[in-house]
Structures are given as structure tokens and as C-alpha cells.
Image (cartoon, rainbow, N blue to C red; front, top):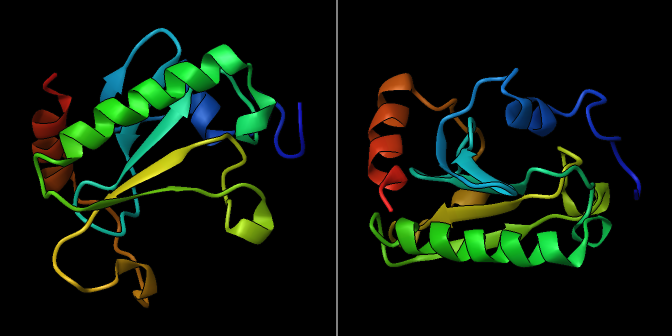
Length: 140
């Protein structure tokens, strides 16, 4: 395992996988999960993770990488229900902006030309918005 948090050692994403931390889940299968970011850049900002812990993409087996990309594709297709434009991001390492050291992709819907990444502050996701988004993005 590479640099970062070992599996289960104070990793919020491992806690979400284990069901001991709450999340607004929009997709899950045997090896991956997708859930809403609690401090979204935009409406529908979703995180896609492998269930198996690894700080970086290169820390997880190739088979898990393949499944992760398939799930990423599914979540991108679902994001297109909200808007045709979106960003996909992967931050690897603290110098790249990684905060949670469990590999994850961000799917960030874009609305208009405003750059959401330069916002002075991000607001916490509201329960009412989360419920609506989970219903919208959970449909296959």
C-alpha cells in the first residue's frame, strides 16, 4: 500500500464503505461506490471510490481500477441528466490537493461559465438537496 492512510485507520471513505459513516449513496456494487460530496463545488458533485482502500489509483489492483472506471462512466452518464457539461478529477497526493487518502474521482457538473473551483467558500450539502439528488442520480 502506498503513502496515505492504511485501510480502516481513520479513513472516512473506508467508514462509508463499512456503513459506519453516513453518505448519500447514488450507486454501489461489489467493488465500488458513488456518493454525493458533502461540500460540493456544484449541485450533483459526486465522488466515485473503490471499496478496497488505496491512497492512489496505482495502489489498487488493476481489476479494481477497471471496475472503478466502469463506475465512473456510469456516474458521468447520470451526471448528464443534470447538465451536459462536467469535470472529472483525480487528485493524487497532498501536492495535488488530495485531502482524503483513499483514491476517488470527482464528477463535478458544470452550470454555465462560472468556475466553481475558485469559490471563496463551499457550503455544506443541504439534506433537502441531497434527497432530491439521490433520487435523481440513483436511477440506473
